[in-house]
Length: 378
Figure 1 (cartoon, rainbow, N blue to C red):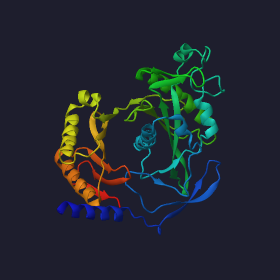
Figure 2: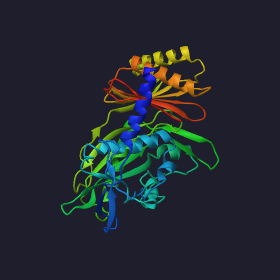
Figure 3: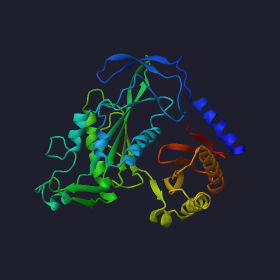
Figure 4: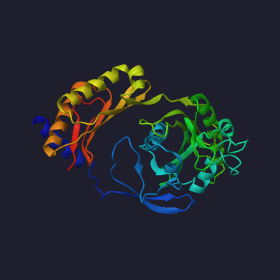
């Protein structure tokens, strides 16, 4: 009962802490992509001190929707978008900058850039020299580039006007090139070594930077560029960022790249067992304890996010069939205890418990914290 009381109290505190107040939003004047001034607002609250405040009325990206047509794995899309924003934070401080989806690279421009050289005058994927119905033609000129994502960062100037003062550009690159030689024909697959992908990605990035510099108003804006390596289409773990650079004010090319040591690992998997044996054993212990007392569970799947060789976050999915809400509470209480007993607190743990009908509960323990907080869905 003590834990259940903690569950309810934590839920109330979470909801209270997140409840926004709208009576103190700041009215601002910003310049838009056409260099015209317009009134906007900055909210008086923020969901986290580590996140950017977002100006509203909210402006969707000028290339909205393109990403879902270009990146086949939903996990890749989520990590690509969130990760690009996170990697920009070391240069564009969330305390000083506002965030806005990309307003300069529109859908038509982006689709042209993502095509093959020769298909359009601005295609960034390599030209295919041989016939399109030949496997060798595709193998000699694989499409490396999947997507280009733009994020904008705005800041007040000395006159109090909010202007574009920074950009980040994400370059999504394939680890596997999937192609057909005829419409309706079989798919063929070609692995792209990471070293080759990075080389091609850096060349593409420099071309993108030069094109951005030719856009009105973007001649001097600093740009963070990050390369992302996609996972296979049906992979159960997302890809990861592999390198980034900062193009300073007025720069026309990347001068120095910084390697990014990130990895997403599926538990259980051969990769986890071989390369991350300690965490793999912890996950197995966790799974075994659940199976011992709740044999009707479907399975436990974990995704670990490693940064600089250390586990930073572990997300666990537990699908299970429940006969009633009391069983949900009891199972959540049991898993709550297992999280505290099984996993050290130097990394974040998030457990999502769901039935075939809906999400039932979530347990989250932040890195460095002792006790998790819990939310039970109604």
